[in-house]
Image (tube, rainbow, N blue to C red; front, side, top):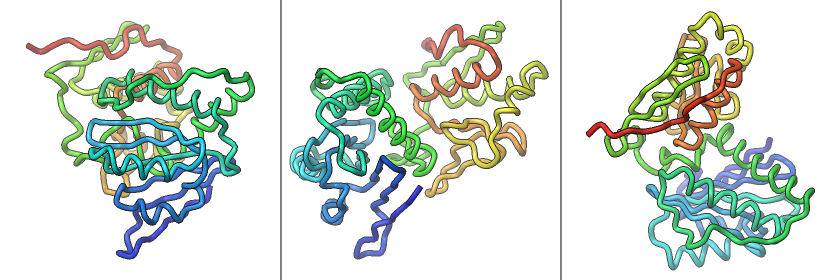
Length: 283
């Protein structure tokens, strides 16, 4: 993994380039479009996501990402940050771009946390079997870099809003979840449910060994949610919950990602999630 920081005139690291062959990922502030234009990867085809408070827009560029971003800089006033990714050889063709863009738009729609600014669910185009596999690998690699290296969760607003403003009781609702062993959980946020499920499994003698066998040496992350060390973002936000001094669970995720982490924890314990993040009103 090669990480490159692009420094602007004010000596601030506002553009980050991550190279993990064959994928590149770029994270930048909107205010850095001028400097971004000097980045070779910005002139390549790619998928981009505009990030704003509770708003997302997914787009594609079959020619140059920076050209599309300059257009959005003129006609969309709500975004503050952008991430984009592609292949280092520029080899994302239209079928792969359409496929990844559609998947990501639907992921944000399914998440329900954001207002998705796209007018459609993406383009439909034929994609060959092996091209689809490659497209999936590109997307998964990009999300891995964002979550585990850059500490940027595009399905969460932590990097857009103040951290204290993220953990809220949405519409005064509680979240409920049930595992196949009959244990039920209830919390006022999806992060709390992750904490409760992980704590239950780690502190239960029946499941403890399975969970600890899957604990990674080092920091817990989205890909490896149980780790020996806590994970703190570059901005000082705590991304994990401490179960024990040497057991931490990654919980800095949105509703959609929380479902995946809880399902992964349950699978490690050889359990299934019977009901997943159902909600009911407190009123």
